[in-house]
Length: 136
Image 1: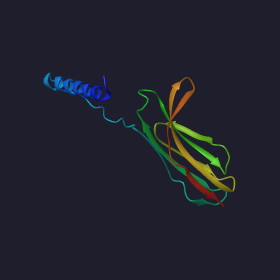
Image 2 (image 1 turned 90 degrees about the vertical axis):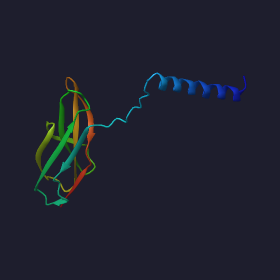
Image 3 (image 1 turned 180 degrees about the horizontal axis):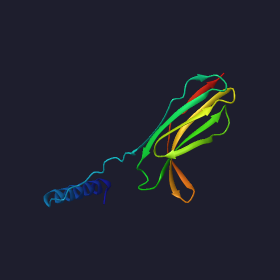
Image 4 (image 1 turned 60 degrees about the vertical axis):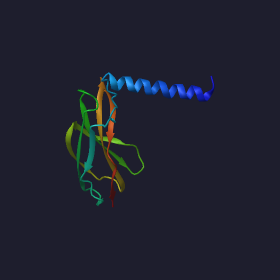
Protein backbone atom coordinates (compact mmCIF):
# COMPACT_ATOMS: atom_id res chain seq x y z
CA UNK A 1 0.00 0.00 0.00
CA UNK A 2 1.36 3.42 -0.89
CA UNK A 3 1.92 6.12 1.69
CA UNK A 4 -0.86 8.23 0.15
CA UNK A 5 -3.38 5.37 0.38
CA UNK A 6 -2.33 4.64 3.98
CA UNK A 7 -2.89 8.29 4.93
CA UNK A 8 -6.26 8.34 3.18
CA UNK A 9 -7.32 5.13 4.97
CA UNK A 10 -6.23 6.53 8.33
CA UNK A 11 -8.18 9.77 7.81
CA UNK A 12 -11.24 7.85 6.64
CA UNK A 13 -11.20 5.53 9.65
CA UNK A 14 -10.85 8.54 11.98
CA UNK A 15 -13.84 10.22 10.37
CA UNK A 16 -15.91 7.04 10.63
CA UNK A 17 -15.01 6.65 14.32
CA UNK A 18 -15.90 10.28 15.00
CA UNK A 19 -19.20 9.87 13.14
CA UNK A 20 -20.07 6.76 15.15
CA UNK A 21 -19.30 8.54 18.41
CA UNK A 22 -21.56 11.44 17.47
CA UNK A 23 -24.41 9.28 16.12
CA UNK A 24 -24.44 6.96 19.15
CA UNK A 25 -24.35 9.83 21.64
CA UNK A 26 -20.87 9.13 22.96
CA UNK A 27 -19.20 12.32 24.01
CA UNK A 28 -15.52 12.85 23.56
CA UNK A 29 -14.28 14.45 26.76
CA UNK A 30 -11.28 16.69 26.85
CA UNK A 31 -9.30 16.89 30.03
CA UNK A 32 -9.02 20.29 31.61
CA UNK A 33 -5.57 21.34 32.75
CA UNK A 34 -4.79 20.53 36.35
CA UNK A 35 -4.12 23.47 38.64
CA UNK A 36 -2.31 23.15 41.93
CA UNK A 37 -4.40 24.39 44.80
CA UNK A 38 -1.62 25.56 47.04
CA UNK A 39 0.08 28.83 47.77
CA UNK A 40 2.69 30.18 50.15
CA UNK A 41 3.75 33.73 50.94
CA UNK A 42 6.21 35.41 53.31
CA UNK A 43 5.61 38.96 54.58
CA UNK A 44 7.09 41.44 56.98
CA UNK A 45 10.80 41.39 56.19
CA UNK A 46 12.16 44.98 56.22
CA UNK A 47 14.83 45.98 53.68
CA UNK A 48 17.45 46.81 56.30
CA UNK A 49 17.86 46.67 60.09
CA UNK A 50 20.62 47.53 62.58
CA UNK A 51 22.61 44.75 64.23
CA UNK A 52 20.65 43.25 67.15
CA UNK A 53 17.22 44.28 65.88
CA UNK A 54 14.31 41.85 65.77
CA UNK A 55 12.83 40.95 62.42
CA UNK A 56 9.14 39.99 62.56
CA UNK A 57 7.96 37.60 59.84
CA UNK A 58 4.55 36.25 58.87
CA UNK A 59 4.12 33.27 56.59
CA UNK A 60 0.80 32.28 55.03
CA UNK A 61 0.13 29.10 53.11
CA UNK A 62 -2.29 26.29 52.40
CA UNK A 63 -2.39 23.23 50.18
CA UNK A 64 -4.70 20.41 49.24
CA UNK A 65 -2.29 18.77 46.80
CA UNK A 66 -1.57 15.89 49.19
CA UNK A 67 -5.10 14.75 49.98
CA UNK A 68 -5.58 14.52 53.72
CA UNK A 69 -1.90 14.46 54.66
CA UNK A 70 -0.78 16.93 57.32
CA UNK A 71 0.84 20.11 55.99
CA UNK A 72 3.45 22.14 57.88
CA UNK A 73 4.27 25.77 57.18
CA UNK A 74 7.95 26.48 57.88
CA UNK A 75 10.25 29.51 57.76
CA UNK A 76 13.94 29.13 56.89
CA UNK A 77 16.82 31.60 57.31
CA UNK A 78 20.16 31.93 55.52
CA UNK A 79 23.01 34.22 56.65
CA UNK A 80 25.07 35.63 53.75
CA UNK A 81 25.90 32.66 51.46
CA UNK A 82 25.52 29.99 54.14
CA UNK A 83 23.12 27.08 54.31
CA UNK A 84 19.39 27.35 54.92
CA UNK A 85 18.45 26.64 58.53
CA UNK A 86 15.02 26.10 59.98
CA UNK A 87 13.66 28.99 62.07
CA UNK A 88 10.41 27.24 62.99
CA UNK A 89 7.25 25.52 61.78
CA UNK A 90 3.56 25.67 62.48
CA UNK A 91 0.33 24.29 61.17
CA UNK A 92 -0.87 25.12 57.69
CA UNK A 93 -2.53 28.54 57.49
CA UNK A 94 -0.45 31.22 59.20
CA UNK A 95 2.81 31.15 61.12
CA UNK A 96 4.40 34.15 62.82
CA UNK A 97 7.91 34.36 64.23
CA UNK A 98 10.66 36.84 64.95
CA UNK A 99 14.41 36.52 64.49
CA UNK A 100 17.19 38.64 65.98
CA UNK A 101 19.80 39.95 63.51
CA UNK A 102 23.00 38.65 65.12
CA UNK A 103 25.44 38.98 62.19
CA UNK A 104 26.19 41.76 59.73
CA UNK A 105 25.53 41.07 56.07
CA UNK A 106 22.47 39.74 54.30
CA UNK A 107 19.80 37.62 55.92
CA UNK A 108 17.52 35.74 53.55
CA UNK A 109 14.19 34.22 54.54
CA UNK A 110 11.79 31.86 52.78
CA UNK A 111 8.60 30.01 53.66
CA UNK A 112 7.88 26.43 52.65
CA UNK A 113 4.85 24.17 52.70
CA UNK A 114 5.88 20.65 53.71
CA UNK A 115 3.59 17.64 53.43
CA UNK A 116 4.02 14.75 55.86
CA UNK A 117 4.40 11.71 53.61
CA UNK A 118 5.65 9.22 56.19
CA UNK A 119 6.98 8.97 59.71
CA UNK A 120 9.33 12.00 59.93
CA UNK A 121 9.45 12.26 56.11
CA UNK A 122 8.38 15.46 54.39
CA UNK A 123 7.90 16.51 50.79
CA UNK A 124 8.24 20.16 49.77
CA UNK A 125 5.02 21.34 48.17
CA UNK A 126 5.72 25.03 47.59
CA UNK A 127 8.49 27.51 48.40
CA UNK A 128 7.92 31.26 48.63
CA UNK A 129 10.05 33.93 47.06
CA UNK A 130 13.13 34.84 49.09
CA UNK A 131 13.01 38.01 51.19
CA UNK A 132 16.42 39.61 51.82
CA UNK A 133 17.26 41.88 54.78
CA UNK A 134 20.49 43.88 55.01
CA UNK A 135 21.97 43.97 58.52
CA UNK A 136 24.18 47.03 59.07
